[in-house]
Length: 72
Image (cartoon, rainbow, N blue to C red; front, side, top):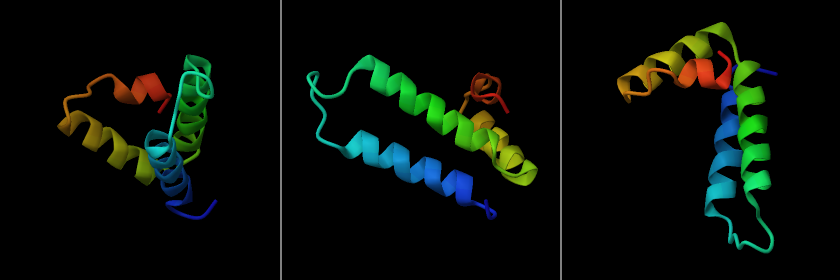
């Protein structure tokens, strides 16, 4: 993928999912987990420069373990 494609796709998918009209009948915890795994996979495929920026931002937000949790 081109530079920023992985991050952009992950962001769009996350925002679409968060903003969708969800109900317990159509969206389960398994759906939430599946999306989290898909987003992590996209982030894992980002460039090293992007991963460095993501780690920096996560640390600034106080999410010290975030990068290891998503596998970067």
